[in-house]
Image 1 (tube, rainbow, N blue to C red):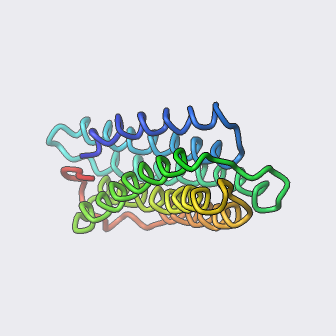
Image 2: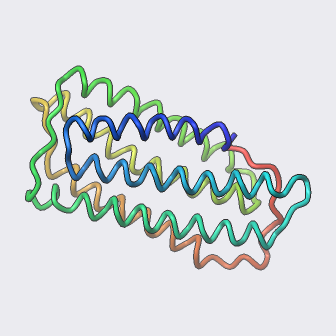
Length: 199
């Protein structure tokens, strides 16, 4: 359930923030910024669902869907902007101890599995709130692929990550912006009324 996912994302965002505080980098700052945006998006969906209280409000669901799209655009743009310095080589490569890198990879693999699970759980549901969760999970999964790659490269390449992560981060950020634009521009007149939300 989305309500259970919010505390999980808060915990993981705090963990990423701690990593950034110990070893500041544009790359990890971008991950923290996106994670905060994801928390905002999922919280909006949870609040909208609870306000329905068994009485679907299609207008409110449409507004929430659009807001989630706007949040995805903003957080993805921040993520992309913070990946540019690493891609251009103007920011120092991130260095992780092998044990830290393995820990990051383990956590991000778990987080990625949860994001993909959320996509699958909402795949057959056509209501707007489930669609908003699906788009949020899709954008999150893309960002997590980059963070997982960063951890794996750090564990196998002498403890550092380089321009490959920055380049992939820019591409993923652009994809997240495209997902958000889809949510903002998608015609909603014929969309189904919101129901119970999973994922």
